[in-house]
Length: 291
Image 1 (spheres, rainbow, N blue to C red):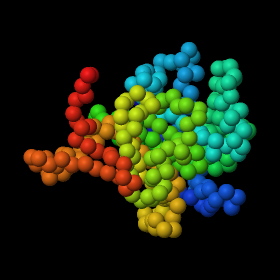
Image 2: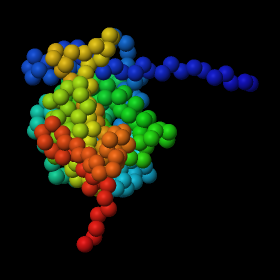
Image 3: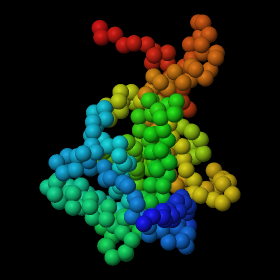
């Protein structure tokens, strides 16, 4: 008997839109249209950033990426203290305890985020965080696809891509282990992007904690979704920041390749950011001596 293929309707992508601001703390609350997105929640392929807890349990998808334990199978999720109703909940979840206890806490958080029944108790997250994780996941799927595209000219140079919301949700690909004290809102790329909404910002070179050497971060703000795709930097508030890391030597090479003047004899090009920090210098391409 012939088996006829059956078309399965895929859940619609979750839009990154806002409804209103929370009057209590003036934080954006993500808004979902009237459609049913229950199926969408169950398809989320996110791992919590504590990959070290999986080392003896489900380590088949883990690898070493520079000096970090990592995975190329999925993005990781990190929730800062801002994502919780009480900062004490965040501290309690990250206190020194048994690996089994921490793993149980993580499983409770992920189960709540993927729950479609409404029967699971909220493990202390702000009410809007569940929808926000899903909205950022939709954007991360696009970033992940771009990262895995073998045709891109930057495929060998982009170290990682990430997206952080103003409510304390961070997703990173390739997935990696982060320090529990990490706070996206305190990072230079996050603060500079919010200081210059609507513009592409670049940090000065800094040493990557993940072991990839000196890097620069390029970041840009994301505004709420609107049907006419028009935004006013003066009136609209950013809802997230998207960023990527590049080796700083390759960043300088990109500048040279795109600026004919810098390729002329006896011409040296330097690049400074708006606060006077040196971002690009010819010495970036010179081999370092061991002496």
